[in-house]
Every structure is written in C-alpha cells, then in structure tokens.
Picture 1: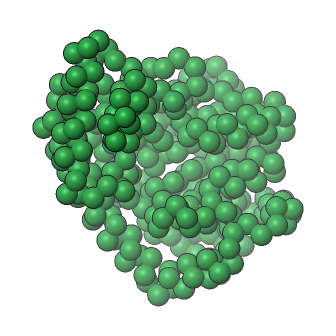
Picture 2: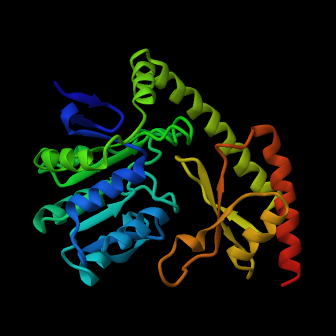
Length: 316
C-alpha cells in the first residue's frame, strides 16, 4: 500500500514514514544516522537557526550557502564546498527569505546529490499555506534514486503544542532509522498521534487547512496594505505567495537588531533578519509574522510600528 500526497506530488510506503516529536527531533535522528564528525553540510544562509546549530553540535562542518533568486545557490556551493555529505534546504518557502526554489534548480540539485552520494534534507515546514498558484513538486517527489529525506511538522499547521513531526526516508535507510528511533524511545504522545489520525481520517484536518489558508491570506493582505500605508518611509515589504511571515527590508541606516529592540519595547514582536545569517550580514530587514495576530488589530500595530521606526530613523 502507498500513500499519495497530491499537493506535494509524493507517493510513499507508510513504512517510510517515521513519526517524531516535532521537526527538530527529525533533524536530530537524521544527523545521528547519516553524519560523521567533520562531514561537510551545505546549509542555506540565511537559514533555519536551530537546524544549523544542531548540525554543528553533532559535529558537522557547516558550510553557509547563499540564496539567489532560484533558491540555494548551487553553482556557488559546488565551486566552494564540493561533495557535501548533507544538504539542508527549504525549497518550498525558504526560511526566512521566502524564495521558492525553481524547478530547474531542484532538478540540478538532485542530479548533483545523486552523482556525489549526498543526502538532501528537505524541510517543508509550511507548504500547506500557499495563497496563489499550484506549488512545485517537492524534491522528494522529483527524487527517483532515493537521496531525499522529507521532513514535515504539524506544529505550524495546527498549533505549537502539537509536537508531532515526521520524516519520509528512502527505502534503503528504513532499517537504520527504525533502530535509531528505538534508541530515542517514545518520540511523541501516542494519545496525540491517535487523535490527529482520527482528525485526518474524518476530513477535519483538510478542512482546517482550507480555513486557515483563507484566514492567513487575509491577514497577510491586511499586513501588506498596512505596511504600505504606515511604514513607507522606513520599510520595503516583500510580496509573498506562501508562508506565515513577511520580510520587510529597512530603508534607513538603522540596524535590524536595533529596530527589533525598539519595537519590542513598544510591545511589537518581530525578528531581525541578521540573526539568521552565518557570517557577514547581507541585508537589514525585519521578519514579521502574521499568523497569530488578529486581522482587526494589525493596522493599529503597524501604525505604531511606523511611528517607532520613523522616530528611530530621525534620531540616527
């Protein structure tokens, strides 16, 4: 029996699915099974902070790979860090820049991984929330030789306290991953797993995703409009067709960390893009999440944000 995921183009044997306590534990298990000390790891830069730190802790030699308009910069990576053991990427909605990896780049990456016996970790952390057009097939769906480990989570699509993730492993790795899972013991709550399974079987999960996609699209549009109205002097918001955050470049000379701190002191939460970088920071921007903010209060918060940033710019 095989499971089909029409939205991601995947067809997998249920035995290939390893349930974990969130995506982070999936990365831990992958690292322990596949990585040896000082193995080269390609990692998107800027990129997922916790995953990068984990690869270092386990002993990987993490190589920061810049992002271009097609996703992970493959030509740069091949030239500077050839033949990696692992390649960590977020192709559907790059974390945090929001770039979608092109089909041409996906195929080239898979070809290189196959030729050099590299393993690709595909972190598909928020692919459910796409607001326009059909998504490109997952790397795992395009992979014909079994080099991709596909990681997903329910923490983003439901709520953070649902610590259930999963990794779809190539058939050749199934035994090794099953043994490692036994070493880790119980990976998530059996009661929560059963409840989620019933929720999915009854069609509740699919309906929930449709509802939240409409809700988040509305919040995204409200945030974009408010930023254009109230922050035109200080921020350049980037359009996004997916995900649960907007990236807004800072127009003035102030640093994103200073902007973040001043906004935090005013009761407005954001993240500075600079914390996602390994090495020199290429852009000063704010990462603005909208999934947890009610639509009706977004304009008021953004108006306040504009006042804080304008005042900060005037004093620098």
